[in-house]
Every structure is written in structure tokens, then in C-alpha cells.
Length: 312
Image 1 (spheres, rainbow, N blue to C red):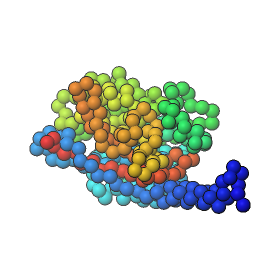
Image 2 (spheres, rainbow, N blue to C red; image 1 turned 180 degrees about the vertical axis):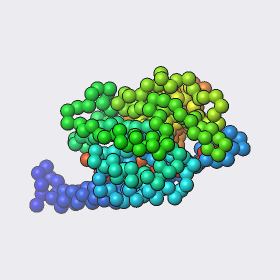
Image 3 (cartoon, helix red, strand yellow; image 1 turned 90 degrees about the horizontal axis):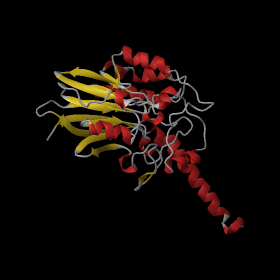
Image 4 (cartoon, one colour; image 1 turned 30 degrees about the vertical axis):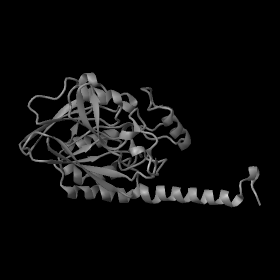
């Protein structure tokens, strides 16, 4: 028997089965196949000792995610010199206690953080195909408008208070410093450009004098933020938000970045150039997903251990 338009029913059935198997793999295995990326970045002064930086991003915690919680807790065994959290910690307003439990061991180390849009607002159920089409067309974020009707306001204040109490530096459109083993690190952070909460004019002026290294930190790597950090002379910028593309094509890569960054730099270490100035850019693929699209394909969830090394 043949289906309408001459498509064999067996082919249709096989295609549906393959699609279902791919979805089961993307949701049931790969989205829970947590990895640690290791990279080295030569940005420290000559003869400085290397520093180990753990970057966590886009956790999107949902109540009941025990494997993710245990994996995040285990990262404390890396004994990083400090932690950078680049936001989007939540995807469930009831998951703050579980998020803080997951990050508890890491909060024993010095750290800095910025927030992303999903720290402030919960995700909204929508057609994934429409979402993907909009991103391919270049539509990004909430465009600075108030959240739509039905968007949940997340309880971000207890999370902020817990981070602050642990000694992590809040880099929301501000600067901060950490002293580590005789070295002084300066940080300049922005609130999330994805919802136009970034205020670079409040922190402009470039790296601070007297610091051994200055780092720019932002959740979403929009070009306006990367341009500003780079033009001001920051040697290293850390960001998240992209999920590494989340649904990628093997041997091709990401289709979207969910911002105006090109797909070639959707995750990992690259560079950004403005005029004669160049900065290293590291974009974390993150370790979570929106609760309504809990799938990853050819893009496993991750955290990154960056070794900051002396310049060559």
C-alpha cells in the first residue's frame, strides 16, 4: 500500500521511527551526558603562576534533576582557583533550593557572577520550530520590552543573596576585584544584553590599573558588548547563553546562536577583534536547556576548566 503523493507507508513509518529515536537520544542521553571542556588561555603576565578557572553557565535548573545536581557538586573536586558563573541558572521558579544545593560546594571557592534573562523570567511554552525559524531570521531576545503575558517572574533575589553571602562578586553592570595568591584580578560585568539590561556606559573606561589581569563577563555574547570590551582593551571575555547551538548538525555545527554572534564562535575559545585590538572570547555551551525543550544533539552539556597561563 502507498500513502498519498506516492510516499510508501513503510518509508513514512521508518522516518517516524528514526525521528523518534533521535529525539529519545537527544532528550534521554545527550542532554544528560555532562562533559568538562579543558582549554588554556595565555593572558597572564610573564612568570605568573597559572590559574584554574571553572566556568559554569546556563544550568537552567528544574526540580528533580538529580544527575545534574550531583555532577555540578562533583566539579568542586577540580579545586579551581575561582569560579565564573555566566548566568541562566534557572528554568523553574521552584528550583532555587536545588540550584543552591548543586552549587554549594563550588561556593566554597572565590567566584563572580552575572545573571541571564532566565534568572529573572521563566521560560514560556512555544513551538520549537517557530523558535528555530525566528533565530535563523535573526530575531533575538525580548527587545527591551516588558515580558509577555504568562511569563513567570523567577525568585532571583534569594539566589543573588546566597551568592553574595558566599563571597561571590555580583558583576551586574559593575566592577569587582579578587586577590588570589599574590595576584590581583579585576572584573567588569554586564547585565544581560539579551533583554537589553546591559549598561556599558556605567562601567566603561577599560581595565583598571594595578591589576594583573582584567576580564569582561557577560551572559549573552552580543556584538555590542564584545565590541565594547575589546575596544576598551580587555584581553579576555567570558560568556554563555548560546547553548552551543543546542541542536547541531554533525560535521556542520550550529544553526543558530540565539544572538547576533556568528555560528563559528557559538562555543569554545575564539577571538574578537575591533580595530587593532584583539581579545580572547570563551563562550560556554552550558549544561542545561529550557525546560520546554530538554534536548541536545551533537552538543553535549558542559562546564569549562580554563587554565589562565602566562603570555607566550
